[in-house]
Image (cartoon, rainbow, N blue to C red):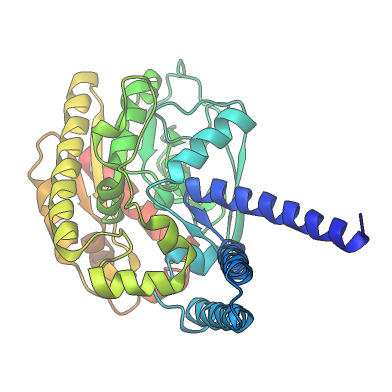
Length: 412
């Protein structure tokens, strides 16, 4: 066997392995630029070989010109892909913009579950939590921080469920976990410093159970099934409008299956093509008029109202839990960066819904920021990262001070 033939077969085997790897990643909703390259190379090989076979079988005189034309056309298409992806950045997702690859919101739990189960030996079950004693790197072009988790996978110091020191549990997503600042500068940590300062003479433990990417449904299950063993005196739940998009994609309590697994809603069948090709993505947006949730305007409108109702119902369950287990419940609605500039109708609707729920204390953090006078529609840029959109340490500091002041006022 000639060395050229050996090299050709070796390259073919390598390409097949690469394709299998990318198909596996697409199953988990992940696509890189190399996924797009593999797709175009595969198309070129298939079309080249098919036209060559037909040309040889039927003795077509110009089949090689057809082969060359198709290869040229695919090369032109690929240049278009690169232009839309890196120059125009048309319909690029936030994940792609920050990390360079597509990650499906509908399928992100699949990789998380399987990675923890088969690589780390840690079965997540219903819970959206971290592996015990693990670390998480919260980094980007604007900051680089590492979070270390305790024996329960919680972003907090070790606290025993038998500890009788008054305990505040904080629940929420990345804003509560502290993305955008150092671990000890997240607002729950700063709240602990305020509560245990010399001026207050109040010994209080803070359990920061915030988790990047969480939502109120995950947080309710987490509190009900695991965290109530700590017998908290106060539970602070932080929510925002991103929870609504999370519920649209993940569903409500139906995501928690009887066999102790979780399943989100199914994505459209065409999502792998959407993830791989920016040209196809542009067509989907132009023809179907979809947004990043891959829903049409009418579908998104209906799904949003359903998700808002689920959010309110879940917060109502928190209130029932507080009455059953005798802890004080504080629910806080925090504004995303664009909502500090101009309040959205969705924000207003969620705020109104929470105010109507009995048995809880409510903080509209946007109103509280403006009343405080430091984070306002004209100054908010100083307290959020421009690209990442989370608070910086100065923003989280004000957040902690507002929560501390509210807790002190409502316990008088």
